[in-house]
Length: 511
Image: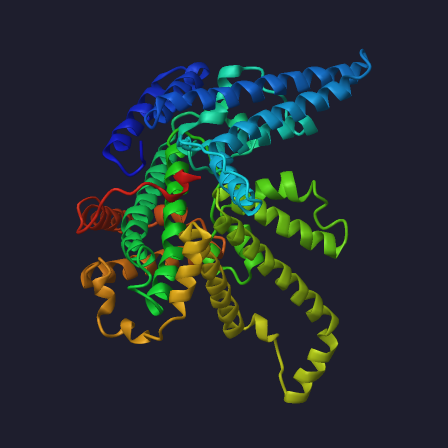
């Protein structure tokens, strides 16, 4: 069941209405039932994997709490060893399930390549393994809970049904945000009363998320798909245009999903974290990753980067840890070397930035003398508007170049696309009407650019720390009505029933 379908628009109000009609102490049971129903709309068989992940981590969490209690009472020697053994086994079992469904065929293809180099017969596998939707997200969320219990950062949940809801809560089940147990699990213990403000803000977030997905992401996808599916016919600046639009597409697609998820949860008084914070206003790749897919970046920071040593083991180790984390992040996104290259490239960007900062610190005195010689006064160049703009555009272009590998999906496709990118110099396509031959009419392209402009206006205020939804809802009634009607008009005319529109699955469902 997709967020951008009539089925969900009917499903959500029913869930919310019944939720508030039930006594608070049993509301979580209703949400658990509806969450499993929501997930089973894709493939009922794979709900067993969701349940298995839930049961294993719940059981392990309870055992960890039991062994910790033994440690406290010093009742039994060796309980710490049992605790570690239980923890490691549960982690490996869950990662094993994820690895089989997501990486088995990828690993087999690499093994067959190595065997062919050694002139050994390949291993045949004639079965397709369907990747269960959302498995990467709910597995990380459950493992995050388990690690928190092991560390003693949170209690082990005793109520199995409530814990099952924490893992399967339908708004964020299939594509995040990857919630921490300290946030979501504790909210499920204390349901909120009906709040008109939550309903207003939640509905607005859903509406804006649909706008980002259906008006911007799905319309940009038409151009991106046209070029990337045949970059030999559309080389040079067609690839540049498509790559930049893919940067917008994937942002609006994933940001749109996260915003709808936040709005859906808020209708029931549950606050999900904001997964994006105006990432394309970032002035460095490091800052970009603090603002993009915040829940995943935070998960890898807390559960992989810091345990590896973080920045505590010296500069060389820190940079190596960065590369490892981003390589793993790339592999998490997809079972392909192209995704690994995308991850490593983002890691390399940050290593270079780190080296540049180190050189800058060491040569700060020389730069100050140089500024005095040429008569520069006042604030540093980087703090001026021109400096900020230059760094923002530079960061956007670097990130967009890395997205090329992400969109290509396979290394050979990425190599072919890069070759076609530099094959011709056809910058005139931006002025001779050639862009209208990519599946979107001139009117549709104008709508797309106008919608992107609105996106960047909203993100500008968000970048400067404003809650745009709260600001909007504080305006006069006529302004709110015009704004909401405008979003509805755009969604209905250029989304649901607009020219060339077809309901598109969210990109991150494939991960």
